[in-house]
Length: 94
Image 1 (cartoon, helix red, strand yellow):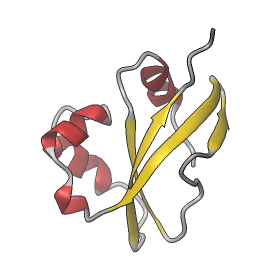
Image 2 (tube, one colour):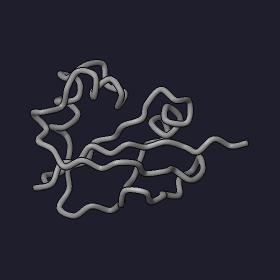
Image 3 (spheres, rainbow, N blue to C red):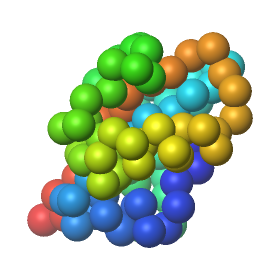
């Protein structure tokens, strides 16, 4: 799963804690981790869902202005039969 640096920075700052992906086959698993340019990203719950079910709150948690902004982004994504809501975070560095 590739994430833009801007998105990784928002996750690290605590402004974003969800990402959405549409794909043929998932590349992350719940409870797993992902090495990124900003450190190791923790993967939380992953929920299969219909993109039409994305709420205003979900869209904002993923860094979008609103659901319309989310749908505009979704239209640019590659086709895939699986759509997932993925909780993400960087562990506290203490």
